[in-house]
Amino acid sequence: MEKLDSGLVKIDMGCNYTGWLRFKMKGAAGQRVNMRWSERPDKENTFFLTSSYIFGDSGEGTFEHRFNYATGRWIYVDGLDYLPEAEDISGYVINTDYERAGSFKSDNELFNRIYDTALWTFENLSLGGYVVDCPHRERMGYGGDGSATLNMGMGNFGLGALYYKWAADWRDVQREDGWVPYTAPTYWGGGGPAWSGFIIYMPWEVYLQYGDKRVLEETYPAMQRWLGFLEKNSKDSILVPWGPHIEFLGDWLRPGFTGGTPEEDLCLNNCYWVYNLELAAKVADVLGLSSDADTWRGRAAEVREATNGRFLNPEEGTYASGLQAYQAMALLAGIPTEEMQKEAWKRLEEDILQTRNGHIHAGITGGAFLFKTLQKAGRNDLIYPMVAARDYPSWGDMLSRGATTFWEDWEGDGSKNHSFLHSSYLYVGNWFIEGLGGIKAPGESAHRGFRHFVIEPGYLPGEKGLSRVESSYDSIAGKIVSNWEVRHHKMFAKVVVPPNCTAEMRFPVSLENVFESAEPVTNVKGIQLKDLREQS
Image (cartoon, rainbow, N blue to C red):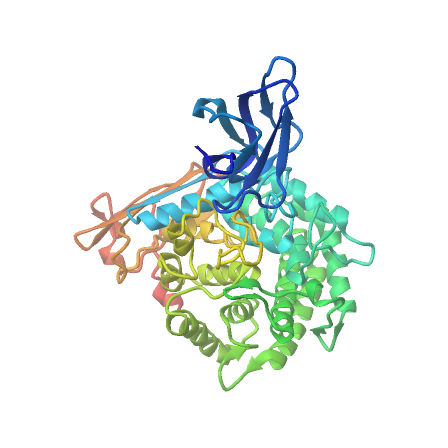
């Protein structure tokens, strides 16, 4: 806290946060005190967040938010003729009521900081019964941003009730012709199919996480209408944009660029259409609607073939521009033919490791599905360098420049008037427990709710910056623990499986090199053994 030459009092709350302020102060009757919130130490106000307090006859009083909230780290106060004491000022974080469910700690301090910052950022965005993009400028429940926070949110907090409620919001805002806005419950803002299609993606992921199919039963009619809208806005199985560019976005806020070219956006959105169709088929399977499931899968095959024909550069094995977002979305949706799969993966690997020198080059939606694609394929070797990077563009770069919450864009220079507390890149928060701890969500409807799950410790022998991980997740079926440590070229793992649950543990070694309580695992009763190499 300091008194500036201008007469302003500058208060540093220690970190960026969303919530209330309680400020005990004194002055003369009728004296007005103005408080302005800022995310930047060099700017007296960001996003017009301002409150005022007028003293009564006593000349003493306490300002406290009641019906609104503010966001920022610094508070600039004018109208005070003294420097307040620290004990006169308190900040209170506000968010939707939920419990912590996940934990992660390792011997890599950068990873610990990124994990903690991702969770802190999320906690300051999950207010009002949904997850906002930012808590100051827009405060909107964007579907694209929701994809960036969905798995990390559910993997670290108990959010079944929040997402069940948010799914109802998405149903409520849908138009009669099937079009879905890009935000809910608010009804404004730009986006594209990967924003609106959250109405399919989110309920499916919630079902897998918690095992409650009501969210599918109640949302399925809306899913049908949304897919019907896409059909009406397509020609020869290629989407036709239905509005200006701001309503047909693809990847958004990748390094150095706001959005993609029209061809890039069309590629990502057509891939996402296939992904939505495949998820709708899985939903129909769960609901016992086999005819619907066959219809969705048949249509997905047609759109997949058209998408591959339109956007594949066969000589290069790339889709559209070949950037990370488009390669990953194509792979996630199964666009490449069997013959082209290997080449498409090779190009993605080259872009990450060689062209970008191990850095991410994707934005909100593209980055979310890049991480999903890599995690689904078990490619920790490609994620690790992106998360371990300390220079631009990376999460480590933000932290090195003093970030206490993650930013809206990778640049963070304030030139775009973007926020410093945003949901954009929070998908990294899911990787620590799932990718490194190895606690993997079921992935199949028969194994929803973690009654059966996989534990695959994410140790990478070639990386020297990580040799110990402690992770846990309080699933709907009970607490799962996965701790591992490497000592003297051996891995020691401790796993807790909840009662009445089963787990599959995977290790990248031969069975004769695996022991359970010092006993060769091949001699232990009650454990079924499987050599995964025989399935490849």
